[in-house]
Image (cartoon, rainbow, N blue to C red; front, side, top):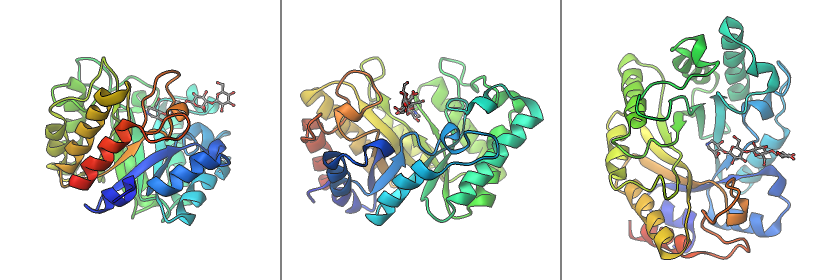
Amino acid sequence: ASTLAAAAEQSGRYFGTAVAANKLGDSTYVGILNREFDMVTAENEMKMDATEPNQGQFSFSNGDRILNQARNQGKRVRGHALAWHSQQPGWMQNMSGSALRSAMLNHVTQVASYYKGKVYAWDVVNEAFADGGGGGRRDSNLQRTGNDWIEAAFRAARSADPNAKLCYNDYNTDNWSNAKTQGVYNMVRDFKSRGVPIDCVGFQAHFNSGNPVPSNYHTTLGNFAALGVDVQITELDIEGSGSGQAQQFQGVTQACLAVARCTGITVWGIRDSDSWRSSGTPLLFDGSGNKKAAYTSVLNALNSG
Ligand code: G3I
């Protein structure tokens, strides 16, 4: 197959990208988007600050632009993200206790209800575990409402949209020996054992020289999948260039292909110039929209998987 989406579809997987609403008028960008990808994540437009700028007042126009563009082209959408310590609207940032808990759950319910039946999956909770060696939760206003805030969010999302896959999404959870990876794994195992509704785990996969693609990546993905959840690479980008970068992209692709329940890969932007990273060349297309060596290595890996 000659596109990322078509190559991924050969094994029943998807290949997605993050999309920014303000680039939907860029014909080079949209041309690559329509040609190469069959799954879309809104880079910022479905986050809490974007969708509930004032408490109880919801704004879906930019999220809808991305969702409608994708669905009109026959692509599916991953919703990102219902509950997160970051990108909270101003009114939420200083809330606490039961008022914050209710506001968060209302947000989850309203946003998941609005998009009911239109998204393939939701990142219900994003980045709730701490970095470093402890393996515990990240301190945040949401965490301070009680350790059960994550399962409460998942239950609210399930009630609002019973057919969306519900994912927990985080970064630096790729290496099996990281304490953070173990912390998330233990939470998912606990959720599965107690019947808390969780369907998938997203691995953001933001890599750089200090945090390279781990050689045990397939082990991590396989161990999570063995808990009875799908796994997905949700925000892939890898700092670097040339054949070294291409090799790392190939390794990530092969790790996903090696795990039956790894259902798809999403890169976090289209061209290097679209990346959230202020410098560097972490994506599959250069600033002019040309395919890089990394693109070819991913395509070849998908075609031989
Ligand atoms: O749109 C405004 C613009 O009007 C303003 O002039 C400008 C000045 O700061 O800011 C613009 O908004 C920025 C927005 O990106 C759009 O470019 C925000 O400041 C900036 O904070 C925001 O960054 C986003 C970041 O999440 C916020 O946490 C990145 O685009 C987005 O790629 C990044 O994505 C996250 C995932 O959601 C979660 N995982 C990590 C990943 C990378 O950080």
